[in-house]
Length: 198
Image 1 (cartoon, rainbow, N blue to C red):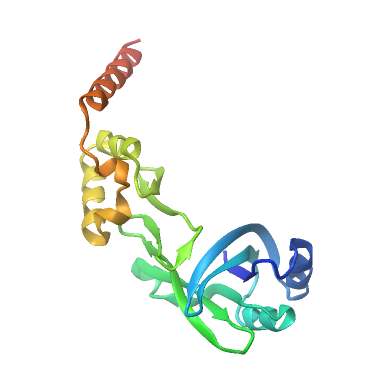
Image 2 (image 1 turned 90 degrees about the vertical axis):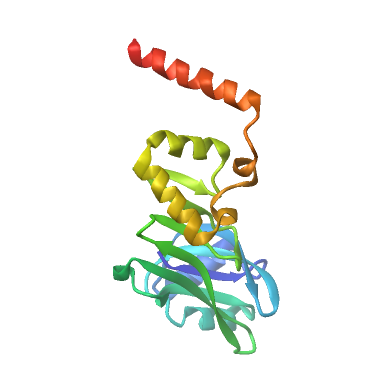
């Protein structure tokens, strides 16, 4: 769903919900995001909405005399039908200036969503064989993917090759396994084998 945001501290949620309702938008969920603009990092109160959002940021910026943003299908780079696209936001400043900032990449070939370096608060995800993993992958998640076998491992390697290991793997996952880790893993696999037999 599209996102609508106004600068943090400029309106309470009830007021924002009322204004959005008058614009024909239905807020479904609220969150906080930080976006890196040409004027620095700005913190926003964000509504996940149902409705058409084109032009809403400008109206909100004027209404609350603050920085506001909008996202939606009109701010999409690439075609979902092609399998890879980026979602962006249009940030509007009180003086009428604006900028477009890409905040998340969607890759249907590798089944992942990657938040850009210009946003804080949006999570990245990697989908493997019906299981959702949060990125960057923890050591536990990495181990789970390897247990899924060849196809899952190949997808992981392609994701790392395409987007870099720093975006796909956590610092913990990159550390060499210690003897303690290996012993714990052996015990876990042994327990799974015993449970399966019973």
